[in-house]
Length: 311
Ligand code: TXA
Ligand code: MG
Image (cartoon, rainbow, N blue to C red; front, side, top):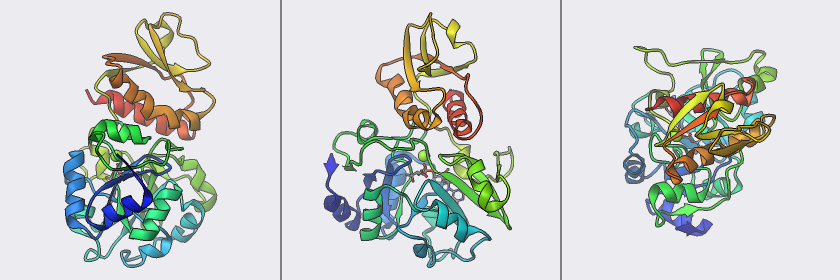
């Protein structure tokens, strides 16, 4: 059910939840002040309690009541990448952030999104917690229709058009003075080099170690249909997920991600194509993995590996 901005605002202020457009993916929003709305987010998504939520703010000033200490270069990072697809994990005053939001951790994740409707809502209602607006484990939603397909046509959605980035924000965490990427996302690690003086390393989750980003532990981005990651998709005779320049002479059907020279376009189409697999009842599809691994392509490859490994 599509809402106007003022309807979305009233629903949030009265303790409801609303799907909200952002430039990365749609978020499922609750006011940080409303414990019952935060509860509703976890139950609606089927989200594990150990997976904390990102607090979305309208400006860097809104961090002040929550954050205990500001790591080196944070100001510079925020002045360049906010509003935008950067999330930062910061040490917090645990009395200021509900336990449920931070899953009992002494840190919280913060992001200032760029989508004008998200920013207007944040300015009117104050900080909102927003996980991606999809059922836990499934591909994220990059349109209002995707949200309705997961939560039903009566679910309240603020329609802001398709999400332009199409993959989630990049999450940075400072260990002392050194920044690390704890979730790959719409900003490639290389873009931080001019500010930090180094390319932040990507932290992978190790077995038996407490994860820096708990979400990395859970099943993610997966359609019901099985994905086969392939270096020889031209030999595959079923459904192929591929690129506009490439030829798949044996394929029964091709779902196109976009151009093999345009990672932004491919990221923007990624979840819509993964969702198409299930909409069309496709049981198995081969994915053409013959693409670069630099910049944003790394994030695209990571999402495809996760989507394929969940069966
Ligand atoms: O682009 C995005 O970030 C989207 C839009 C809606 O803003 N949101 C999003 O939220 O992707 P979600 O809930 O799907 O993913 C949030 C990730 C999870 O992997 C979670 O574990 C991590 O952020 N996270 C949240 N709080 C954290 C913390 N204190 N420390 C480490 N990771 C944290
Ligand atoms: Mg998510």
